[in-house]
Each structure stands twice: as structure tokens, then as C-alpha cells.
Image (cartoon, rainbow, N blue to C red; front, side, top):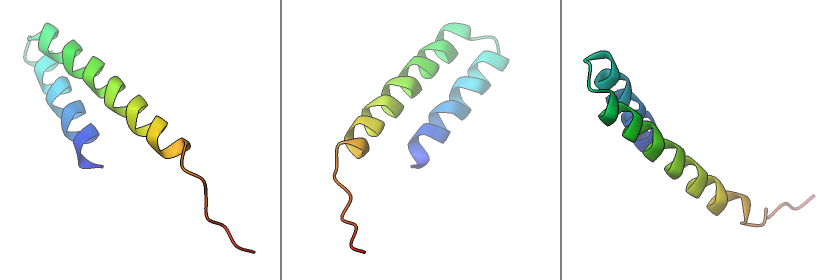
Length: 50
């Protein structure tokens, strides 16, 4: 779970330093990774036993 935070940090630092295309690319990559990981986790059934 460190990867999304690292990508967000790199994107924010890139935008702050003036390299907006790298920052927006990092934001798009962050969105893609988050959606893919969400899709993987939401499809697994929960093994709940009450």
C-alpha cells in the first residue's frame, strides 16, 4: 500500500517544481493503480463465519 502514496508524493513534487506533465501523468497512474487494486479486492468473497 506504499505505492499509491509514493506516486502521489512524486506527482505533487513534480507539479510544485513546475513539471506539470509529469505530475498529471503520475496522477493518472495513481488513479489507474487505485482502480485496479480496488477491482481486485472487491471481487474476493469475504470469509465471514458468525
